[in-house]
Image 1 (cartoon, rainbow, N blue to C red):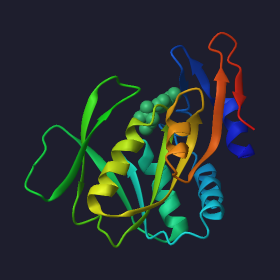
Image 2: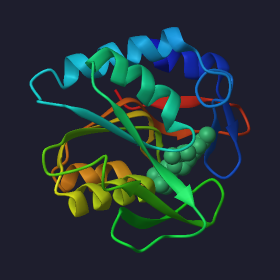
Image 3: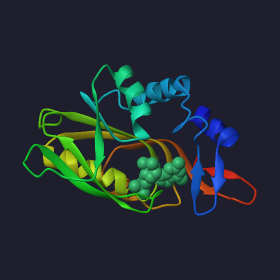
Image 4: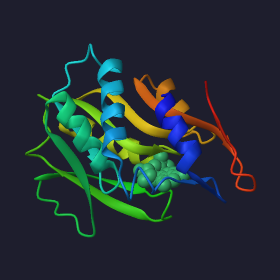
Length: 192
Ligand code: 5GP
């Protein structure tokens, strides 16, 4: 998506270690007009899917997912990161390795908000190794919910997550795929 690529080039900051900082418009200060344009693009890409729920993970997915949910006219559920898991059967839970914080989180969704009746579009801000997405997919599987598609704002194509998930058969639509980036010059190359 040209608009997002241009914004990444303009306001994104390439950090050492394969990290792209986009806190000026995506995950700290949030440009809601841009999110609305992204939501429209996912609506077009997933137009033939019977989506009745958006699923994301806290914290940085929530803003984008809320705007997407508004455009689809469906509720949004966010998986919560937690310290203590209550194993009484009222929660679906999984463990996720965080790329940016280099730690493991327990993540939960209440069984009240995800069921076999649901047709889910998963939304997140970034895709790197795919750990966050695999956790959300596990939760959908535990709930018996159908995954209709996955919408990612920025995929780092030089990390394995995206290609692995496409190979596994998921309809994964990333609006910008960064193929390479250079922390010395700040240059960013996108997959065409
Ligand atoms: P994964 O689980 O795919 O390895 O990483 C995805 C998660 O890590 C995203 O939800 C995002 O919060 C965070 N993340 C991964 N790479 C980056 C990055 O380059 N920049 C930022 N800002 N977040 C990232």
